[in-house]
Length: 432
Image 1 (tube, rainbow, N blue to C red):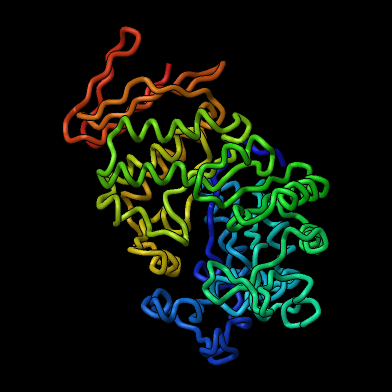
Image 2 (spheres, rainbow, N blue to C red):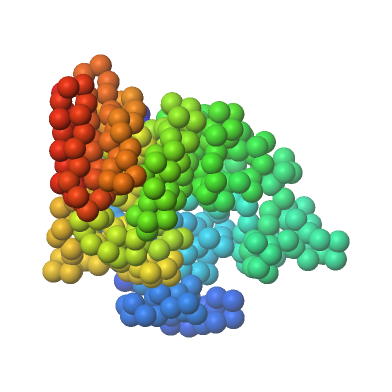
């Protein structure tokens, strides 16, 4: 399926939806770093600093399959899953085996069914690939001979670990033989349309080129999205990735809405990726307001739905692809990354209707007007005192002017002899 006007929906699998109680984690079934695991619906245990990694809510692939109509109703075109391979933690970034699904996530039949269900709806599947390190339980590490060949070991024989935290030993990804084994993962999981590469800055260019080439041979439309928090101009120009998880969108937007930077500075920082990234990569810049590694935007930087609405307008109408973290569309809040991993709220009486309306407004606008996905871009006016950002998107068929007024007073702008006004804390979109 070709990539077009997309909406990415990011699911933290364990915390989304349970579809098969028979595969739930049992209390004390195994340990995570010496602590017995457990299951709970208690938000405090699921988000606590000392408990969130070993307390399971038991979201799984059958639950995601059951939620596909919900996702389709929101216009989701790509479903991004947090890691689903065998692991002992709730986040599963410490992989025990790349070639097995975690049994508490589902079976191979569940995976094939998810791929089939999504593709039947015209939706794509993106998986999170964590290829720079594994857990200590991985068979490659547990075998002493394999460990010598596969991991980065210090002279004393101990492994280098993720951020030197003493957990998750690093793979020797510069070694072509190790790369060969990692590339087999692409073939093991057919039907994947995109791979998000976790901490991609730690992976060598030789592996990134080979991985992208392997994916394209199996899936001609397949793409590689890098999780890098810093700018990736050279990587995109060199063809290492097709796109990025776009923190170059999130960071300045966060700073603007917490009043750390001016409108002019926001525009300059956004322009750094809009003007600097290759045009073909802009559509694969996934514009996020938050994810499992950050606090949620709503309630933290946007205290009210009216303010959040302004950020949503930027997320959906600027160049790039909107990336929704599960629950953002209904107004879930989280003060830190732990709280951002709270279970999905399925009780509709607890959904924030104003937040829903704001998302539907601008996602619907983007869906109805392809100019926001593929059109050219230019700033029309940026004003610090008014906290105003005005920009234009256009193509051969349509022209749209967007005015985002984050200030406390009405704003007025003249463009080509026409006067446009926008109330305080509001967005105006004009066509023609």
